[in-house]
Length: 210
Ligand code: AMP
Image (tube, rainbow, N blue to C red; front, top):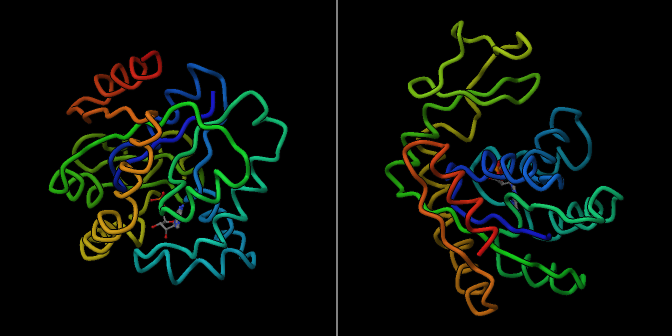
C-alpha cells in the first residue's frame, strides 16, 4: 500500500508512520529525517537545506522532490511505503503524480494549533538516535539523556516557540491546500488526533481499512 500522512508539524505523523510501518511492514519515509541526517553529515544537501529548516521555512520543492525520487526508487519501497512530511506543497504533490506513483490512501491527522504549540515546544530529541521525548508527557528517565542510547537529548532549533509559529503559518498557507487536492481524488481520510497516542493509533489503523 502506498500511503501519505498529512498534518501540521507536531500532529504526530512520525509516530503514526511508525505504527503503520510495524503493522504493514513497509518503510516510513520522512523527508525531515533525511534532511536532518544530511545536515548532520555535512553533505551538500544538508548545507542547502540548513537555513530554510532552521527558520521554519520549507526547503525548495526541487530539492525535496529529488530526495523523494531517489528514495522511492530503492528496493524496499516495492511493496509500498508511507510518506511522512511529503508532499508539503501542491507542486510536490503534482511531482509525485508526474512520477507515475499511485497513492492508495491519504491520512490527514488533525490537531489544533494551540495543542501543537504545547507539544512541539516541550519536545526533546536525542541528537544521536533521534528518539523523541516530551518534558511533560514523555520525559526521559534522566533529564537530558536518551533512555535508548544514552545520547544527549536536545530541543530542535525549529521547536523554539517563534519558529513553531512560523512553521504553523507555512503549514496553513502551503500544506493545508493538499487536503482539497486529495479530497478530490476520494483518497483522503481525516483522523482527529487524540490526547493519548494509542487512541490516535487505533483510529489510524481503522482508517487504513476504510
Ligand atoms: P519535519 O521533521 O517533517 O517537521 O521537517 C522539518 C523541516 O524539514 C521542515 O520545516 C522543512 O524545512 C524541511 N522539510 C521536510 N519535508 C519537507 C518537504 N516535503 N518540503 C519542504 N521542506 C521540507
